[in-house]
Image (tube, rainbow, N blue to C red; front, side, top):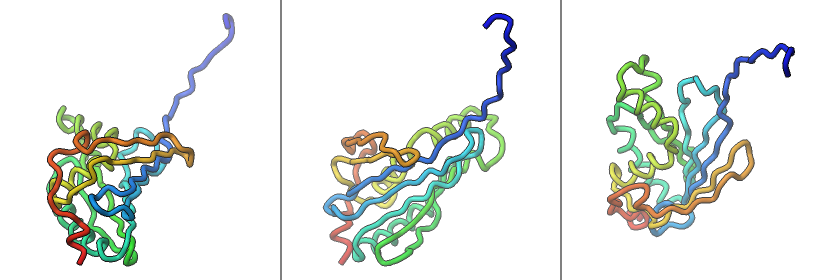
Length: 178
């Protein structure tokens, strides 16, 4: 190595595509789940919207779409939810929007901490927390997640709900879907 000229190439780290699937997050409904889709982007770019695709049977999906409207009305300086859109009787989509990165400067420490938290905390945790605390939906006691990156399986996780959110909501979606 001595005598050789080594030049450091500037690296532009890239975040690859990441998918998190959460089957059966709502108590009492085993055939309703959602997927969060992170698109590939450069590390230094503001976080793009993260779409959540929620799929399930028609009766609970209609009620869920109504309840998810509560999330889009939530005021948070760190993030926002788009209005939910029913693509069909069995599919709803909404998006997580990072409000810190799009607000301009990150000069104060709290805003920088919120930005990092939005970047590293999986959106599924934020979604589940807001479903329980804002929409008061009762979640399953154990949350299962399947993580894949660049179309390869990365991890299968099962977390007790209390590791994600406390307290749990009281509305049982399957009872509301009548």
